[in-house]
Image (cartoon, rainbow, N blue to C red; front, top):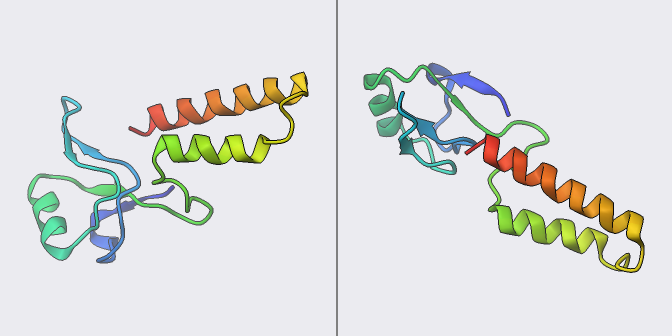
Length: 103
């Protein structure tokens, strides 16, 4: 997901990552629609860029439980295969780490 300068934001885009202050307090949640008034407020707070979903990141804003359920569905039918179940757990662990890293 690309980070774009605030001046290049298009109204209607949604945040892929939350905006936080220096202490890590969330000022604006991921998924929030960027409106002209919100962009103006962010500029006044000194925010110079934001992360928005880019090509290939359409699922970036799905809740973690929904993403995990989709992964489980992709592996359904392989419950008796120990290798596939090990792979499932690795994929889910990576997904959890990715979500944790992106707020």
